[in-house]
Structures are given as structure tokens and as C-alpha cells.
Length: 213
Image 1 (spheres, rainbow, N blue to C red):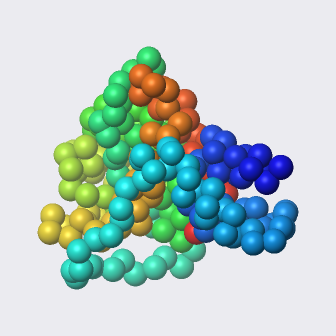
Image 2 (image 1 turned 135 degrees about the horizontal axis):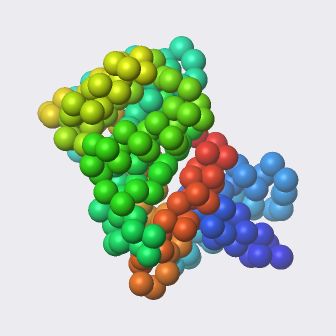
């Protein structure tokens, strides 16, 4: 029974193969058994997919440029791309990730390329039309973000687009941390051909958003 429960809360696509703390916090809201956290640790340590795909997030020490925290939700949004991945039958090869710095809410969109046009359309349709116009969007200086189309869009809609510096990409670190989480989670769920990862994008984002940050 406990193993079945752990499979649901860890291995199911809507649970996303996340780590010990997230899994423990989700389970403890509804269940309890003796040595519960140790059971969860042992189960996740024995998960073959986690052993295969989890990556180290240890970084070399260095100076970061911290971003002042926003005062409310959807004021400061981080934007970044993951990919390229293996093309899917739907033609998707990249994921545009948008993270709210206040709530840590994530919106992720599978897209076929990372052109300026695709970026602008995905940002407008998947985020702005659903959540409203943020005060600030922060990204790196890649050409998919730093271009005439995106500059014109920011002026037309009315948000500031700021950029992390070339020497300090960590200043957009919150969204990069999500990307480091997202990639191995998708890898654990995709098929043997590794080409249906976009089918699991929504469940993984759901599991992330409903977990404890």
C-alpha cells in the first residue's frame, strides 16, 4: 500500500518525479505512517529514472546580481528558453518558460522554434492574454528576446523588458533553476524514442506549480 502511494505521489506524470521534500510535503497533508520521511527518501533513492536523469545543481561560488523582489504577483516575470530537444510529432523542439518572481508560478509553452515571431506570439497568447501585462519581463540577451519585434511589443503593450548581463546570466536565476528541474523531469516521462516530451509538459508544470516552493 505504501509503495503504491509513493508511486502515485512520485512517479505519476502529475507528480513529476520531484525530490524528497516536495513529495513529502504533498503526502503529509493527507497521510501519515511511522518513519514516513525515511520511506520516501529510500523510495526516491531507488527510483531508476531519478538516478538516470537527475542533475547536480551545485554551482561554483561567485558573485550574483540579485534582483529586488517584487511587491506582488505578476509584476516581475522571468523568461527563458529550454532546448533544442528532439523534435516531436507535433513539430515542437523548444520550451518557452515564464516564471513569476513573486509566486513562482510557471507557464511553459512547447514551440517549434525560438524565433522572435514565435517568442512574441507565445508570450502574448500563453501569458499576457491569461494573466495580464506584467510590469517587467526579464530575459537574457539572446536574439530571440532582444530584437525589434520584442522591443516594439513591449512599448505597444506597456511593460519594461530588462536583460541579464552577459557576464551575470545568474541574475535571472529563478527561471534557470526551474529549467534545471524541468529538463530531467520531462526526460523521465517521455517514451523510448524521446520524441513525445511535449505531451508531458503540462503535467510536469502542474506538479511544479502545486508543490511547495
